[in-house]
Figure 1 (cartoon, rainbow, N blue to C red):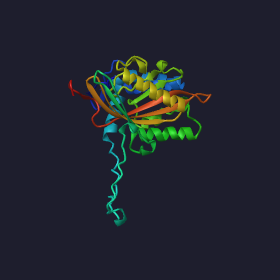
Figure 2: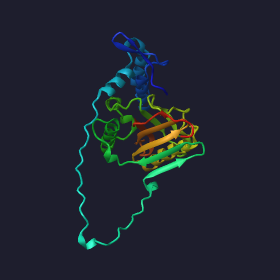
Figure 3: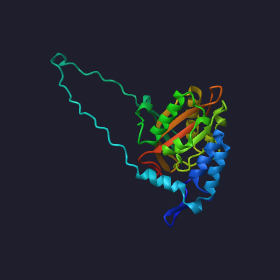
Figure 4: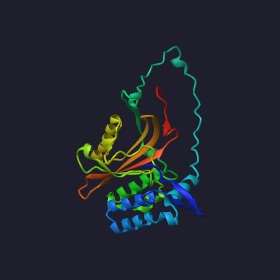
Length: 273
């Protein structure tokens, strides 16, 4: 789904999305899935009035753009020691490096490819990063024994700046073919295809989504991936966080999938490149 178009009206920004504010509609959907129908209806009603009151989606997007990036982390330089005399004349042992151990790469005959790298969750910063803030919030819920979708506070999601970059996936079925999107981020570069991950026209992409979602469903453990891919005539580069949520019996029934686009995302690629 594309980001909603907006046009200035006085000091506010009016939303011209066909169904009203995408930001508020996303919050309404989350509250509905969590079981809070009154709050969901309030958000839905506010979304229908956003043309007159100014676009919430645009205001949140502008606020995120104004946030200063986190300060770079300094690294100490490493002094390379000279070879001790005892090792003089000995040949170095070559250590074989197999890139496939670090990066999972698949491609097809149509020129589509996916490079997927698993990343340590501990590398996420706790502040100043949407994925890091969301992961910290999820970790707090898990530590409190409240890792059910009904315990989600949409205010916390809004504070993390992740609305619009967030999917909700229904994984109650044991068959990944039956997984379906209950919410699809309106502000991500890869478009939505119907209601199911398997419906994407690029089969290697659909298979990868179902595999990763099913892994989190089975293990109940979050996963962080950095992904580079080419789908059709577009190149994508982003980091993806998948978080599991449980039902009363402790089974994973829903996933939160959060996206952070990286430099080089959503670039058109010429044929033959």
